[in-house]
Image 1 (cartoon, rainbow, N blue to C red):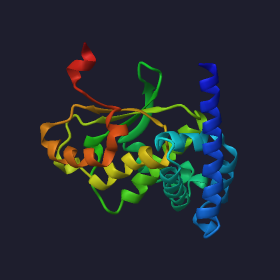
Image 2: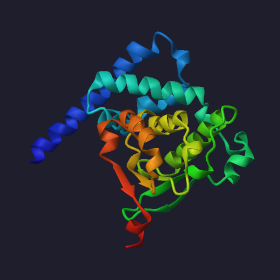
Image 3: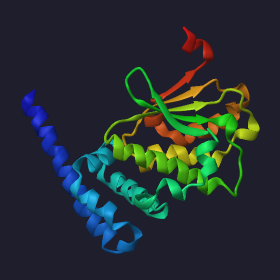
Image 4: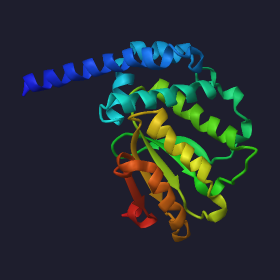
Length: 223
């Protein structure tokens, strides 16, 4: 068993190296300014980061490269390495709609989205996306390698609170931008009126994320 384990570790190491080399030759050389140089440096030094991407893409290097490309482009677009609290509007922190608080039974930090406090607004969507990125990046730096449990608290929410663009973005954060970050996704008190929207969301999640999904009601928590 030990020999097999060592071999698989060697396989992982060679996949990490292959991913790095191919990313440099196939993506970076043609257009380096697509990415933040700090992210590239981390990619070349941090084995756990590359392994995270590979694991989430089932060690298919081709798919992993696309994921890294999308992830690093997003990081540059949102200027994640320089995103600080003062660059986020104060009202975002005060709204209580998105926050990190508490732990689940397995000791994973809870990332809350209180859906009833979310109102779709094209003028503020970028700030909201930046705010989510700010918390994820802060957590990733403070607790490297520690997964999060995402809780969509849908109690008292209705159709006016649904923002499919924002939901898709949150899913992408865990599907693409922060690999291996998702412990589970809890849908708390989802009203039946959300069923149609939920069917669309499900198609975005993909099998890996769907397997981490749990629907919970108030009675489940009280027992």
